[in-house]
Image 1 (cartoon, rainbow, N blue to C red):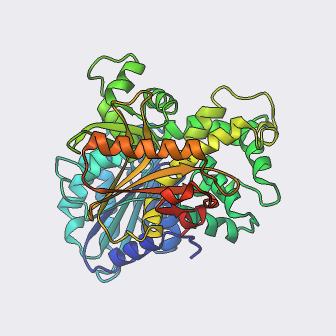
Image 2 (tube, rainbow, N blue to C red):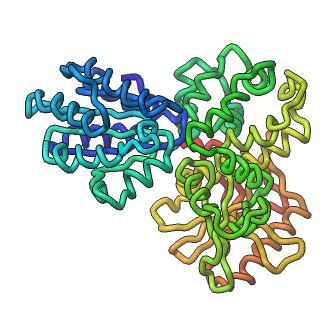
Image 3 (tube, rainbow, N blue to C red):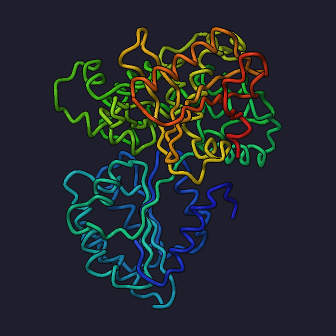
Length: 472
């Protein structure tokens, strides 16, 4: 088994395998995050049946590959199944021949592809599971797919026969910085942590994207080759990504294009106005689907009574943010990234991306602040009263009546707070305390790459978190 990271997922899947009862496990997550690799590596040569749907395949094609997989695993089929009910009946016959004490692992990968228009695939799956498989203690069915919204709506949150029939669900998220470092080290990348963090800010913790990097090239050379060279590989990935996730991808891309322009995010009405949409139109569903797929997150702005008022949607997918910033209107310079090193166009972008990096590693920040055992909520905050509007990168509201007001600063050296920055930080903390009417103690925190340089303005900071802390 050659799996990097994923310790918790491996532990859970192993427990499910050895539970001694029927298991229906769903694994979902964005394209390229490593769902199929995890299952195949963990259960190598243990499958009683395995099949994968064809992205964009027709109904007849999907039924054909399912039938061929049945025959490959030993099913005796004289007349090919005419529909999914017959196909699952053949699967039942195949599994019935196994020894009752032998764990039968059934892996259906890219399951959403099988559910073509009018196919009644979900109905047939429901009949197979509820009518037979759920009563067989040796059956472990693993359903997997990149079309996360389909998995959630049709399997996990199914309101028909599959309602509450899923025994376990697993949302496979991108690698953390720690797992990314493990991956790169295992593949002979001799890069320092700043380079690894920059890699993460561009590609995110997506294992497949990381596999495209070459250790013999520097990070800028890799990025030029993947994004800016003629026929750059990652330029094609953007369209493929959304086509694999959504049957009508264009509205989702338009939403993300708007969110990429707003650092702190937008509420639903702002998104609708930017897209010139009237009320309805399925916008809420589309925003939920983007959350399921790890493209955006939802957080809440606090009012004077410190109650949630309206949800704010903020982009969290690193690859999409990078692509929309630099590749939607591609540069004609094949060495664009190398030629803009340490220039404002790159440094300013890294500053914004570093904030997203911190948002993606809240558990590590809590650990560095020694508050990991305290119940917390976190969010960004923007004032409704100050002009210009005060914004705070990260608020960590704690159950022990303390609020950490976090200022995030990207720098390639120690960060020095000057007189103006000190005043801005004090004003932000004051505005937050005044507008929210909170009685909690305000503790300013500085989150930087290489730490804070001590000077006459640094004493206002109660704690600091560095880039190394995010790797824990």
